[in-house]
Length: 297
Image (cartoon, rainbow, N blue to C red; front, side, top):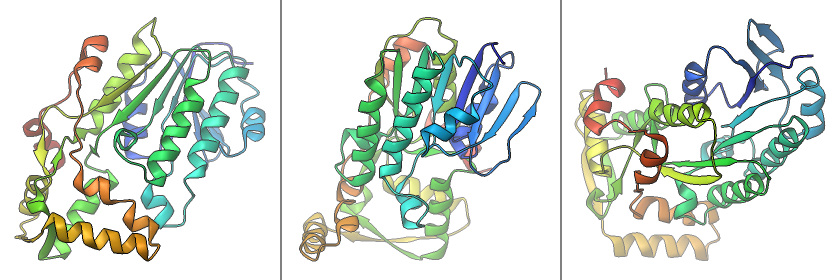
């Protein structure tokens, strides 16, 4: 039975999860819950093949671990997963319930949950499932840190790949309100760094942190930079807000819920205040200029 200090991480195969894994303390046992990898052990790294949608199975698969000190829950179902028919939004809620079951059974003393900034402004199914998961996590009687990152960008992130694909395949690109929507992208390692700061702090109080990059830019600026770094020239077509609103009103009338629910993500300024995170954990994200060479090398 393994009694030494340990950290359980979900979602380690994704861009953010892998960045967090690289920053975890080397002196701790790290338990990875995965569906795509076989159960194996490499020194202090333990890969457990299991299914977070089945809490009973997870507990059986974790039976050799008497105690887990910290859980970092990153795994989640996004809009792209649903579009690819690789899960549904209710899975986010079910996984949160499994995480609380693990926490109660393994004496967890700290829980970190990666939610989404979408919870702050959206009522679309993805955001409401994340909000419901937050409430489940927060109901535990242990210190729980909920992190709501803005747009996470990294060299291997799906978000950056989509931007590159969009600007390289479409010479004409539609922009709502001239692309003046304000966004605050954050570098993937900065999110991982914040998680590590929380892990390192001995005593934490339950709190929710919305975090973003150091700088606020516009959607058009990000698209221009992405196309420029691919040697492409993209022309933008402005879609006036009134026309856009009319189009989305039509999608609601026609019952195209997925399209109509995306409106807030495309028109709302997606910015946050980092002061709370910076003050509580002495953390500071990169500026957008510092991110550029890391994203487009």
